[in-house]
Length: 145
Image 1 (cartoon, helix red, strand yellow):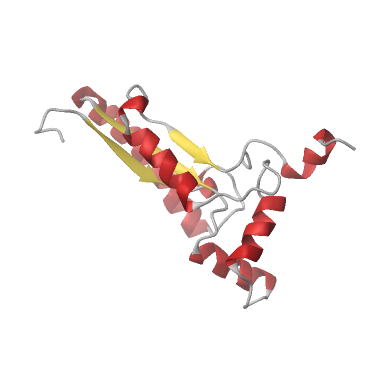
Image 2 (image 1 turned 180 degrees about the horizontal axis):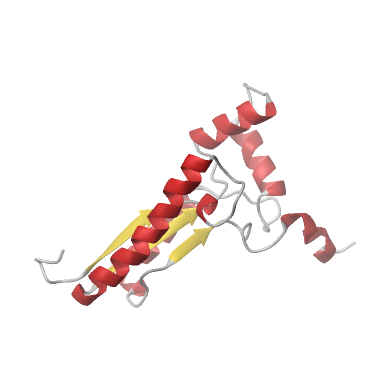
């Protein structure tokens, strides 16, 4: 990208575990936190070449890895993606009943890679249904009774 002289965009992938404690193992949390650090550092280094460097941090996307973790944690080896998605929609999102999807993450990456994000660099776009912004447990205060 530097030698081409046309700028560009790099988008890395981290996790909500990098910004909020207790969501994953120490090793996973550490590596995802390192991705945030290198994203910011690379944004500083590459910005002078017109190269933007950003990161996407998903939470609660029902991947194979997350489903396996739920199966092990809850002791339910036959738990399905749909069941995990329901739990995330109830307990892991401010958007009641809404679980994140791979498409949600892909759209965030596409935005950051696009010209529409031309003045965004060194940013971590958290795709989490608001989970890391506020306590999901307190959301009942805001619902109609």
